Image (cartoon, rainbow, N blue to C red; front, top):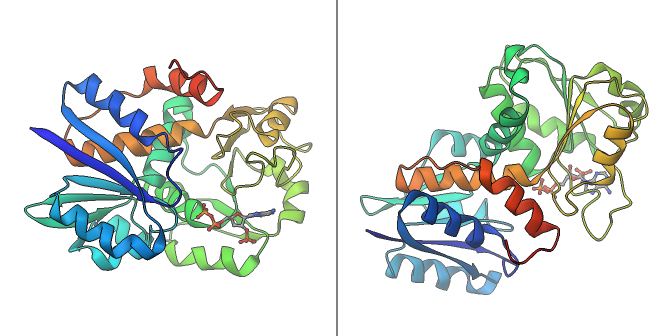
Length: 283
Ligand code: ATR
């Protein structure tokens, strides 16, 4: 079978997803193509009709359509329904089913680098930011059994909105970014989910880390630059770091699994992607 996959979003011209999925096809000996489809808002309806017409087997959805796509779907996977956002659509028995692999992809990436984190689900965790990415990560941590997850955000009401995803066995306190700067030592894992520090604003850092305790794992979902100022500062203060590009690979791998039923390995791609992000086009 020749699969046909795509990506809708705006802008998607520089997306790395086609490159990632080409590697997955090659690695798993599955034939198919994956194309980024630039989708301006006024062409969304037309492009969606086109995808139905060409009988696309599956597609990814990125900014700004992760919520908007839901009205075009026939069914939702329960996890995506809880998230209220979809990044992967699969055609099954003629129906379009919505999934979300962002949070779970993030967690797979983190656990593949720091498997010891699975051993104690009571460790205190801090999420910085409260947007779509934070929602996915918060929920994936809860599903994985973690029971103490605090959230700090610039806008407190936005952080409070995440509490809709909380379960009774999970303790979550909402904090301000300012108070967090003094309390980073209280956490074993700190996850930066905002766009702060992303190119071209590489000098920005969401909170200071000079009170970090050694051995804290500090994670940043920003992957351009590969090592953000936040991660540099974490290293300087004795933390262990987790880069953002792993999430990109693992969310793609989970989408590929949903579409083809084939589990792909991403370990060999992590370095290649890192080189590519550093500007080496040969990879
Ligand atoms: P995404 O869906 O990619 O997570 P988003 O929904 O726009 O993006 O959320 C971005 C997050 O980054 C938000 O938590 C935002 O804080 P606010 O809720 O206060 O807007 C946070 N963020 C963005 N720029 C920021 C900045 N300069 N300082 C602190 N937080 C910032």
